Length: 402
Image (cartoon, rainbow, N blue to C red; front, side, top):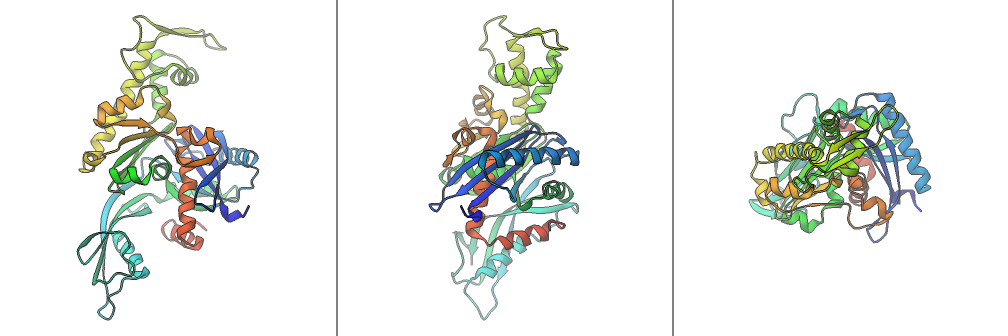
């Protein structure tokens, strides 16, 4: 197997580190060869807060992935998240010189650079410039302007940026192992690569990736990214609510949430309880199932309503014809799709990676969507651009990458 056919995605989450090894096939498909995992420590709300501890956890997950895939990992595509991630839409424009009227590759590159010539907070770095639509001399809906005749090229981009030092910390954590970082990718963008089909993106869709410490989102309309971002609230906050509300240890609260929890209210028998068996240091307890479900319901409703208010700052939420796609570890909670439908008033479903082969248990598990999406993203990048260009891009916008 050629090393160029191998791609590795690394997601440093709040509750787990996940490493997915994939192999690109000649027909354009991807086979998942192995998934490595390790409990996440030194990470809070998707961001590294203890460098040495986080680095050890990443190393454990990489070793696990190497053993399960029988592949030596040398480089990775890294997912990033955190409340510092921001985005906006902007238009770039270039006017062709008088002696030339055919649009070429450099014009397309120049219009992207032009779109980035906007003020972002001083500590921030550009992460993605994602093309939405091209316009040639006022003609809308141009998919590929190269080779077309025109005097003025314009392009709309969705631009994602984040705090440079926080992105650098993630890169350094990986490079110390030592592994090369091929690129850094916003988690929600990665997840959307495998959760949504192109047809669903065209019809309009919202992907919500709820992890342990963060909720990432990305919204597509007419096949283009229109909104994206991250809230520092996730599944761990539900666990903490259960722990505080029922006065039980966090470990028991997490287990109770996963094994017995539901988002749906009113489905329990009157007085129905869940028995927590005694354990070392814990005397055991009986809790009302409806109380447990109410705690989960209220926190998730808050997350969805918070997101809805954010999305309503722009008009695009009104055009998601395919509805809401919920993924990530928290999407396992029973009844979560129904609650999303209630809040967003559009169809909602739990989603996992599509069009993959290999390790079925991995790509059918929503908690691996972002990590698997990283290798799908890598596959597209390797097909479209020389590797050096991506190294140059990271070095330019995130100094210290080399």
